[in-house]
Image (cartoon, rainbow, N blue to C red):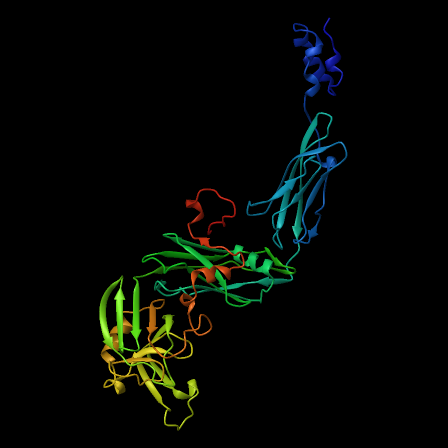
Length: 420
């Protein structure tokens, strides 16, 4: 008669009877492994979920097993199918979220547990997170609603709806921003102030690059009471590499396209007291005709230096009013002397040609002027006057960004999600 000692621990009579048949033809019950058989149980009484109803998204969610039981798997997933990261304790008695929960979001908790007596089962739970007290939105630039074609010097800009001062909160903002490009480049973020960030590559954008910028922090915690607002995105293309160098000493502007000199133009720049700024500037915009008044730069009306003119073919390089434009009244001085109030003047014909051969994002560099250096920020895009080493130091994450689209990367920790 077969030894039934191995059957005694089995809770199901029907299972015990099923086991008896093979035992009659086998060796003694000392080798019976039926004591390890698993049966299905309701896992709900075996676990406790800390999140019920509406919960604070800034607080972690915990799942604990009742004494004698253990957790075998826990998954918290949002409506978009994304799983919230979490960690299981070494003794498998508790689990806690480590990933961020989004505000005003419904989550499902799926739990598998073992009762310690051969029973295993699964259960689900659900909770919702509270709405955010304040939402952080982002206005992205440049505006690509037109052709979306820009020069190689064009930086990307982000203007936040609220000031973000805390270093960790700034890191959350950067994590919510994704820059991808084809071809890929090495670039980085620079916090201009508490509400403004700029992104630029280590070197000028390659010709023909397509660029995507996405802010996707919707519902994600930025700081206490502050969560990411609506998603924002833009896409742009980079055109040919157009660089103009204005030499205030030789009174010439030289325009290069993709490294080749296309044209050299006689010009006049700022005279003493109104010297043109040195350094790299980025074209901000172009106006077929613009009214220029000396009062806008502090020249009193009626003084010997005052002026009020309608100027043609004006290419702007600073917000304070520095342009490359037509100056037919100074043709005699162009190529000879500097007589302007800070702008780069040239003949009407040359100004139209320059206007037609330049776009927003192109580079205009002034050298050998007696003026101050171009401001890095606040008066246009002087971003390229900051060394790459210093630029990276002003990232909240303190590191460069690789703009390879995520789908093209080998899996690696810390990679940012793809654009959707």
